[in-house]
Length: 241
Image (tube, rainbow, N blue to C red; front, side):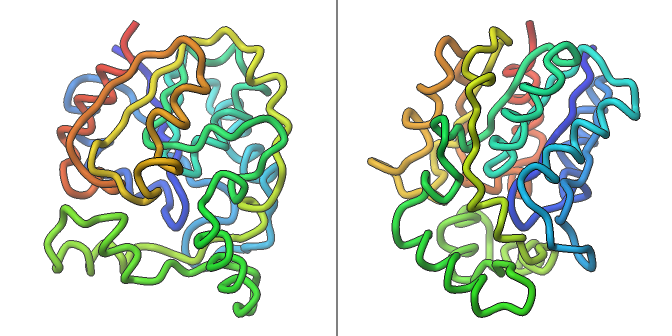
């Protein structure tokens, strides 16, 4: 059996992995779902990307975790890439699920289409704490379009404002691209959180991993809510040796 550490994406926190984590545990695996610094309701949002990375590396060290399959979803891809630079000896495999794999020197915003860059900058500037609250229409139509309205609304209520600075921090990633850790990419085929084509997740992001294992499943960017047991099975497929 494997030890999985699941790193959430923007607007999420670790608790939202609950149904997926339960399904993985049902298969006999050990699962950890830490919350990235600055994420969740009622916490200090004045964090940078390095703070996000330190929160996960610190979790691995404090819990003495080794031989870890480290998975990142969406924004979480930028975090696990940096974590891998810091503690590669604790990791067995990296799994990116519809996740950002930025080019060296790029920020997450650099990898987003212009309309998202403009929207996120304007929302952060209009906030009192430099955060971005995801508009419900984007959640409904681009992130979780495979859910019914009731599930879309109930899951939206679980989200929290996203600190903006980690979006905008450039990431060197030189050491990440030199690592020889095994890597997998999970692609949900109906994920339109990044518009398909020029800005799409796969193969744009996945192809940057070099040699990697591709695992696909039907579903949206938020298949963790709409089909958690299926996602858990695909995580196992992506994480096996």
